[in-house]
Length: 148
Image: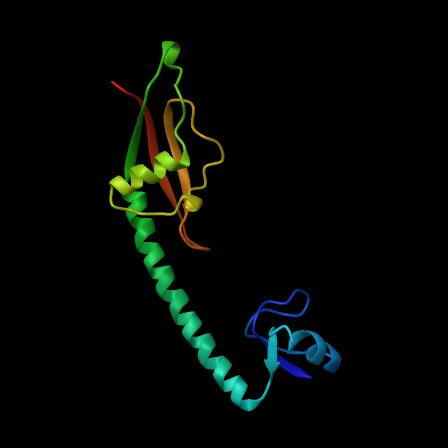
């Protein structure tokens, strides 16, 4: 039986693919869970249109992500922190601080996109990856300096 997958199904295929499955698997598992539809001519035409629209949306999102990436990579931000003796930093620079610095420059990104493994606790220059889209990652240059 040929079916069109509506969602990704492990060991079967990805959403939008037309796959051959056993009749019982399709009727008793895929159809009741709304994971697939029968591969009729009408459904194939409809899924082609949905696929085209999805690709168009993905291309548009990628173009927008590239614009944001270019904007972020042109920035060089500095975070001023309080330091004690021997330049020991009080506190740290966190994802929340980085998102705030970006917002101050007019670039809004969700906190989950900043790929900071650990909070920054030492003065210096850092390159921080920001994952804007699934294939688009920008590198932000961040200077952690002593507050005067």
